[in-house]
Amino acid sequence: MSQTTKYIWFNGEMVEWDRAQVHVMTHALHYGSSVFEGIRAYDTPNGTAVFRLKEHIQRLFDSAKIYWMEMPFDKAAIEQACCDIVTKNGMKSAYLRPLAFIGNVGLGVLPKSDKVEVMIGALPWGAYLGDDALANGVDVMVSSWSRLAPNTIPTGAKAGGNYLSSQLIAREARRNGYVEGIALDTNGYISEGSGENLFIIKNGVLYTSPATSGILPGITRDTIMTLARELGYTIREESLQREALYLADEIFMCGTAAEITPVSSVDRMQIGEGRRGPITEAIQKSFFGLFNGETEDKWGWLTPVSK
Ligand code: PMP
Image 1 (cartoon, rainbow, N blue to C red):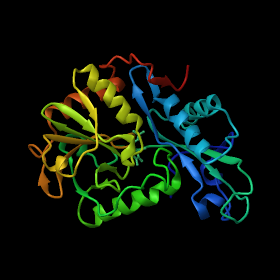
Image 2 (spheres, rainbow, N blue to C red):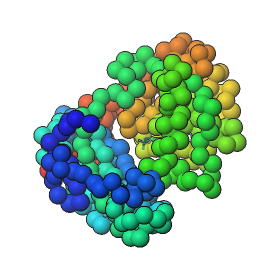
Image 3 (spheres, rainbow, N blue to C red):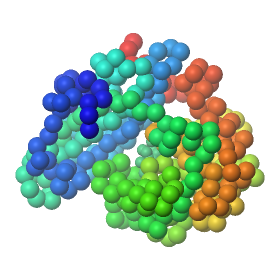
Image 4 (cartoon, rainbow, N blue to C red):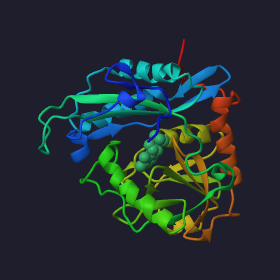
């Protein structure tokens, strides 16, 4: 990939883009031993701020713990590095990618060292599912691939290897002319998109799949649950059958990259009016209001990159 920003934070130092390299024997390349995060920094009226930084870094450390990876920095240091890399690159907004991985420790599935290397990139990144997706919605399909079954690979950890499943789901969707795929879990209940959680709206109530449906319990999902309750909506975390998609009044997908993206059709069946519905729009307004100053940040979710 061509250089998009000047610096990458790598193992505690600001390294020039071209010099942020690893060896081909890196364990993570061979065995998928990496955990990561995707975080957004927004250009707010009070300056550039990272959204829910603490929760993302906590999840990074939780993911590392599940895989017995030893983080060589504490959470505060990684949080600070996330802020510093945005400032160092002179960016007003950014998509942050902290990644912790097992490096060149030799061959063998079980790593010979649990010590990990850590990098944080800050990249310019717009709307993940297309520029007009936030307003007009996207066409999605139910994937022929199921999400990871419990007791196989833990979906609550955001680990590199999990994204092989996501790649199959996303590629199948693209090859069939859809923007995104939705996977069912191994019991046939609705799980999530390849990189997004899902909300289904029916008769004014918001439904979302529980953690037991093979989802990554997203931080955007949690944000939306909080904001939607503030707006007076009821939210239910429930196992949902596939037909709930087809009969929904509105559906939207959510994630750090996708933000809040309405779904206009599933398997070519139109959802509601086939465009962004009113509840989705109200929740989007409240969500994006956090970044343009219209929604008060009562929760301390925004961390300024420079004090
Ligand atoms: N599910 C998957 C599989 C994801 O990759 C993501 C993106 N991290 C999400 C859900 C949404 O999580 P978040 O809102 O924390 O970005």
